[in-house]
Length: 286
Image (cartoon, rainbow, N blue to C red; front, side, top):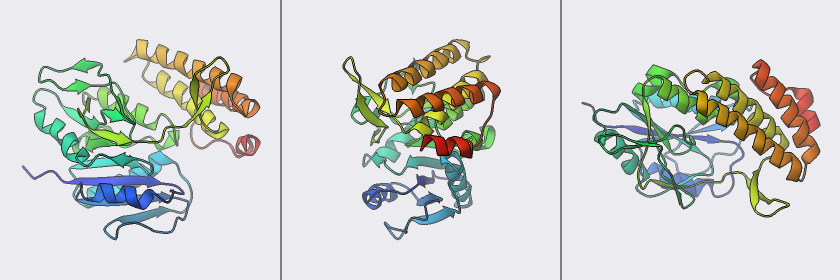
């Protein structure tokens, strides 16, 4: 059997000044690193070992990852590590994630995912006979995917553009008989939205109105897509999407635009309209 060859694929769009340093933490753990600039025309920075690819326009994270995965295949990858530009890996991350595949016996592992995110450990949903912790879904940043799994299930759905791209991929992986396994102890630091205070106390995760459109639309689309295989999850997903949207509209600093994004996103989700948000809506939500 050929030795494992991991190629990292990093989706980038106007990365911050700490990006080069985070790349340094990746290149020593993998055979090659590919950065895909998704239309921001960012000046190349970081280690010389990193290969840069560019989209002429912003096509969304799913397209950026797929472009990088295609290059990873050309580089002979057996596994692809997908990353966001703001993710920082623990020093032993890749080795820990690869260990999941080597421990699998009766389980066909398609992807190994982060266990600890920003200091918070995951909670597995199932545990296999060989002791692997499994999850129904996970964020794509820090996801180590077997190329054999990609061969079987395909890449990320570019029609979703952004948001729920990882969720849809994980459920498709599982629908094809592969598992999403948690790499015990594998830790990342990752920026997730912006915390805003709730009127009654506490906080919630806030995104710009244009993101709200994708969050609502894609949440509905993905929940409906897997409603036959996972009926209970689909119902819970629809409730969660609605509850989060209502919370942001009620509490957000741009509640009017969030309300518009929620309504249009909801309608488009129900009728199955995919792709980028309409230009007229993009102007309204600015």
